[in-house]
Length: 239
Image (cartoon, rainbow, N blue to C red; front, side):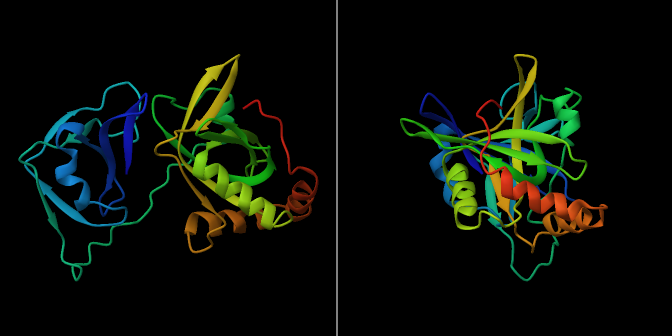
């Protein structure tokens, strides 16, 4: 859930809805009646909605779902809570990881936001520009491919704090809703300042615990894993 803004002016409230099958669809509440609905939603809640419109999920910014359509709230849209005793078995998180090689070689579909997972091998110094803060993080995946990602504001603070407090601890990082564009013949990868999310070393998440297990299964990977963390705390800014 995030605010879509343009030059500090809020345009809409954006959601990603997930159903019990893990399918995702984007939803939009226009600014003109955003205040009517904003208190109905928080991340992780289950809601039933009716009397909404839909629109084609056309090419453009903020495409967080590959669904052909997106939900558009109307003034008469109805939002109902779902009884907590109803077991709908809806997952809290659904990731669609893109291999680093597909990003670097421009194979991935850059029309959509996507997700990445890897272990941290480098973190740059933070750059502060007014109210904005950014940091460059270098990741390596289980195939030993590498990728630099720019994180912003709160996400930048979180990774900086983690690495400062535990500089020798292996850190597995999931970055959700990454966007990419071609810049100087390279893939420039960044989160969006409004909706990018990160997950750090949360072993309760199957995606992270499974990733660590896969690394342990790779021959001689454990020694390389530890070595990377000891020599590569900082990386250059170009990402």
